[in-house]
Amino acid sequence: MDTVLRDVRVVDGTATPSYRADVALKDGRIAEIRREGRGPRPGGARVLDAHGLALSPGFIDMHAHSDLALLRDPAHEAKAAQGVTLEVLGQDGLSYAPVDDRTLAEVRAQITGWNGGGPGDTSVDFDWRTVGGYLDRLDRQGIAVNAAYLVPQGTVRMLAVGWEDREATPAEVDRMKRLVAEGLEQGAVGLSSGLTYTPGMYATDAELTELCRVVAAYDGYYCPHHRSYGAGALEAYAEMIALTREAGCALHLAHATMNFGVNEGRAPELLALLDAALADGADLSLDTYPYTPGCTTLVAMLPSWAGEGGPEAVLARLRDDATAERVRRSMEVEGADGCHGVPIDWDAIEISGVADPALAGYVGRTVAALARARGERPWAVARGLLIADRLGSTILQHVGHEENVRAIMRHRAHTGGSDGILHGAKPHPRAYGTFPHYLGRYARELGVLSLEECVAHLTSRPAARLRLPDRGLVREGYRADLVLFDPETVAAGATFEAPRTLPTGIPYVLIAGRFVMEDGRRTDVLAGRTVRRSPGR
Image 1: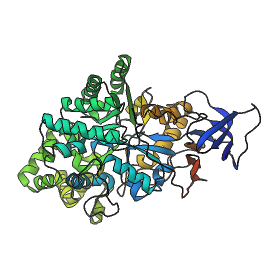
Image 2 (image 1 turned 30 degrees about the horizontal axis):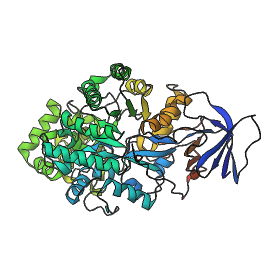
Image 3 (image 1 turned 180 degrees about the vertical axis):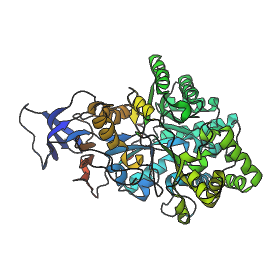
Image 4 (image 1 turned 135 degrees about the vertical axis):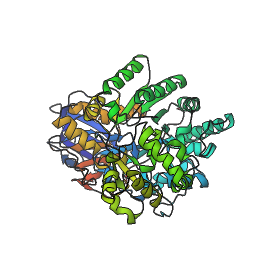
């Protein structure tokens, strides 16, 4: 054997009770599992005494925003140190493939707050235009963890329709369907949408259903950030269930939260909706992160009509006093669709990152606090920042409810997703802490899930959604993507005050049998590869 993990507590991803064993690895796979007291122990070139540690499958991050981080920083310690061995990119309907020269420039400008990569950023060479080209680039450069990709519906709409707020023509729908099919043929595992982000939010249900029919034909799944997580959240969830049932497509609900004051204590209503759909035969799953605040860009809070035409058109509207006043009224009085139909609470909007270093003084403060300090109205502060930072500012939005978070994570269709934005001076701690926070806070300290249940949520359930036949379990013949952690000490180091702090209690992480984390430190191993939809499905 190449490596033997001796005397380890195996938490195998099935949610059944753990057991002690020696686990032997050979050629990147689990070659033998010898339970305690059942015959001679395997030997190997390296034998690691793992007494006191638990062994689980590698964690799968079902909602990641590492699209450029993997290229800019292949070591990717933020995720490797958490035990993440696979993450799903291309989320929320906005990413960097498929594109042409025009749309690449537009999407770079639109989501610079998520990933950097905006105009003038030369840290990444955007030398691809197709989904296959992007995946090839990841493999060619070498990456720390494995990566899968969703075709982003908003980016596809940019290509076929542009930034107009209107129904797509039949010819445009046909082009979008071809683009989605090409992305799936090139290895994408499904389709994502960001239905509170322009231009994806301009799509009708009929248009989305047609795209989901294509996804269903390739046995992929649809992952929507749906139209509202605030006012109308339940209706928005029901909308996604209905259209995927119509299309015959599997559904995975992105960051399935119930946020804002209107939804406090309403998680049981969402869970009842999901249970009814599952009982009726829906192929449905969801992911959440174990925190209450959300994180996105400041420009995403604007009403959808303000985003028509793309980033430059948004800036022109903000510079015009009369139009800016319309935007303010929509956000503060009416409840803009960008803010999920709820009037914005500027005390809940904390600036977490800026594109322009000269604006660093905004970071870590709420818009309301900045306004009070300056003797200005909050909208004046927000408007000024949007213009000065060219829409590149990110925010934390403090709108969640702990009881909803706990209730949803218990659901049988639940998986873990960090929604981790790694860019910015003060990112959300979920980017560095999601998976150890599940294990330490919610399993060990609070008992919301047992350790075995928690590991299943983070491993085998997402592997099943991704249709991966040899990942997500500690089982002979499976890939040796594994995590060794101490169940008594594992914890997220990241906090809102120090969000880039690495976790504790995760000394070893292996991908394809190779140590990417050893003794709690990142090695130089780049064992990750892209995980592509299998040909023929």
